[in-house]
Amino acid sequence: MKSYNIDALEENLAPYAFKCKDSRGRVYPEKEHPYRSCYQRDRDRIVHSTAFRRLEYKTQVFVNHEGDYYRTRLTHTLEVAQIARSIARVLLLNEDLTEAIALAHDLGHTPFGHSGEDTLKQLMKRHGGFDHNIHGLRVVDVLEERYPEFKGLNLSWEVREGIVKHSTRYDNPPHVESLDPKLAPPLEAQVVDIADEIAYDNHDIDDGLTSRFLKEDDLKKVELWGILAQEVNKRYPSISDYMRKYQIIRQLINLQVSDIIEESQKSIKKAGITCVKDVRKHKARLIVFSKDIQEKRKPLREFLINNLYKHYKVVRMSNKAHMFIKELFRVYLERPDQLPPVFYSRVKKDGPYRVVCDYIAGMTDRYAQDEYKKLFQPYERV
Image (cartoon, rainbow, N blue to C red; front, side):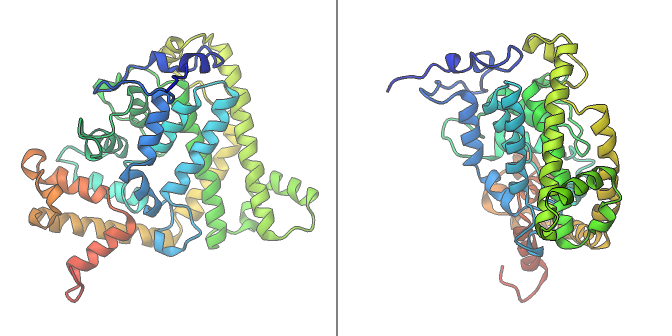
């Protein structure tokens, strides 16, 4: 088979884009593929992993059984990847690396969203802790078993780095010595971080309005939404409320993505970035919003916090999730022999706390609920 010249395909990338030839490689060396770059292979391994498929039934804001419409971790991940690739393409960054990091960034998330993670953090506080970035790395390095030559997916150094150094208002990157915590992440990883925030805000507004936990009359009082709502109403005065919502969200995403592209180009130029080494040494983020948009986004985020994330029904779901996970953890810890054999076999090596944590973190919402029924409802089949 004729080999493609990956280096030639990457010649048109910006000088500060991360190229395959500069990769630090994999923990277990592998022969390069004749027509897929190392980051394309990473992307494909992620998409075919069990952890990636499980994202379909893991909570974003609304638990899976609340309805088929709402975002899950999987649809959120796909939206992040789409936004991130759009930004990377215009900035002439490595789209394959960007996409691979985007698709992997939430592999370490627990069932029931952030409430699930908070519960495991409490339960593991004195037993090695829990962080979904670290757990994501553990998933791709250890827990996925698909290859006879090694454990995990054997992803490239840069994708693993992107998982660990993922940083948004919800995520603070942990310290992992083997992935050079002092180095700033490449621009491709920074693009994923900011795309994550855009996706969060916009799809949570969409889901919030659909669930009627949010009211558009209240949203109109938020400056950024109000301005775009007026523009959409002026352009399409007779469209339905249903369609108007999508048009406003569409404009909101476009506004933010356009702002990031323009502002990031300025910040890269202002910082004198000419190569990847310059990016690595630069402490401040280079993929950024303008100050104007950053200020206008704050009231929108505050609105979501106060009106959606603190909505009494969302709080109820979170509290119920805390109960599920806490009780499952207690029962498995008391009798680890109730775990599936593949997990129970690891108890001596990794200790019961870490094994139970791994098992629960990998559950989907539905599986966790089913396990709870099996363990606590006497007439439910086990």
